[in-house]
Structure formats: C-alpha cells, structure tokens
Length: 176
Image (tube, rainbow, N blue to C red; front, top):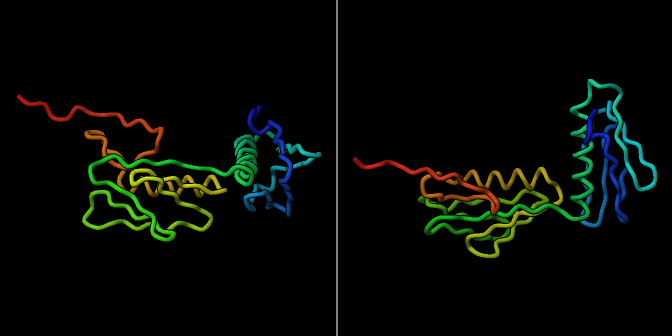
C-alpha cells in the first residue's frame, strides 16, 4: 500500500489545478507551474480535494512520487520555497550584482553565478545567501550548485553550507 500516494491533497482557496492530457498546471498567487506526469497515474478532483490513483501495484513508486510532486507544486504557488546558505571561512563573502550572485571563496577570482529564471537571490549579509522561488526542484538545484562551488571541508569546516547542515569534523594529523 502506498501511504503517500493515497493521501488526499487539499487545494487552498485561490489555487486552480487543471489537467491537459498528461500535463498538470497549477496557478496560484505566486505564479504558475506546469509538469508532465506519468499517463498511468490518474488525477481526480472533487471540490477542493485531489486524489491520485494507479491502475495496479506495479506503479507504486511513481504513484507516491506523482502525488508528492503535485503537492509541492501547490505549496510552491501559495507559499514558495526557500533555501538558506551560509559561508564559513576567513575572507569568504557573497554579494549580489544585478541578478548574479558573486562569491569570493578563496579562489584567485570571484565566482559569478547567474540566477536561473524564476529564482530570486537575496544576500542579507556578506556571509548569508537566501535562494527562493516557486519550484522546489529549481530552488534545490541552484542551492546545490552554489554549495558545490566550495563545499564544506571536514578539517576546519570552511566552505558554503546549508544553515541547518552539520559538518562532521576530523582531527587531522597527529604529531609524534
């Protein structure tokens, strides 16, 4: 039994969900998202509740994934998603120039990263970065790309990390 796939999705007021063949479009106050879904998974909407159904047990995995993706689309157009990163290291700093994110993280040159369409970058201080948007996948992917510029190392803990990330520290070499 798919526990996630069988959950009912509640559509808040101000959000419309429409299906065009295998594509589902969600419109809300923050924007509009469209996604292709597997043709075997059927969506049925009754009032403000949506249920996803599958033909048989061979589609269990895609059933739960489809339901989670549709739920994330609805959350995205109503509330949006945010990832927060922090820079740890002497001289490490971030700045925003236009729509680009400029990182000085110990390389001989600053690293410029243009923001993808639909992603907003906010730099409240020179060691904090907030990435937000309506698509959970795009926000998470861009945050992972920013973190990959200088991922945290285990000896001194320097690098770019998520705010709630724990970096396991190592002891290093021991003397004789």
